[in-house]
Length: 345
Image (cartoon, rainbow, N blue to C red; front, side):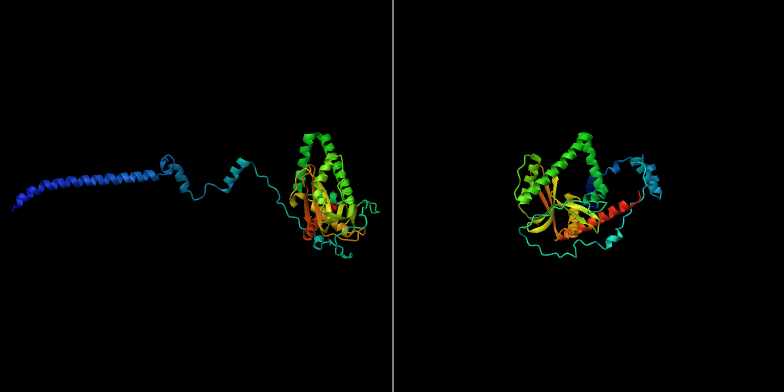
């Protein structure tokens, strides 16, 4: 057996070797951990960490140290003034209450006139064509179209005026007058041709290309119109004090309707595209129901929009519930007209 001294001498080099190896392992482990940490920080490092914090230290201190937000209503108002200009203060728009007289709506139907059940079929007597007169009075009643023109909304008046200015700029004052005159003449010729078509049950021949296009446009509609009772006839609502000229009252697919024929250069496929036309038809029907010249009543309507190029016309049918809604809107416009006329200038 080796003695203690001999064992000590043998173990000394081994301990020295193990110590060196241990130091290398510790150093390697430290370097590896440092490498991982540096890579992790480098990978997740944001742009904010790349900013020179010393350069903006004073700004950070000023923002953090204050207890009030640097943006106040005054500073925001100042910024808006610089960007968008000064604020123009105006009085808030107030909603006008509905006229008190409309709480008791004038009836659409005439209770004194029996509303007999309409039976589709041919009409033996010719249609009524009452001329538009002054009703034996010195002052003529305002027409439906005149009332609607004077009470149109600001938005509708804006678009109408913009259209007039654009057309005047393109055509000139004299050219625009000639354009409106031609449109009016075409409308009159179209309505005259429609009368002939409804009286003879066939589309008349014409050399006027514009009128021929409109007649071709309404050809499919005319096939569904039967039993004409009224053609270009005046209606008067004496209790409400207004008058109008009805285009037609006839059966459309078996339902008695007030029919209004319109021409348009632009398509009007939807009911909302007809603007004030439904109010006009409801006003005509309400007047007819209270006019002693007529022995029947109408609760439905039809708006037909014809096109110059001959494309199929759009027909917008107004059933009784929609008719009543349009009647109420017409009464509001009529009340607005009376207030406007009675107001001091």
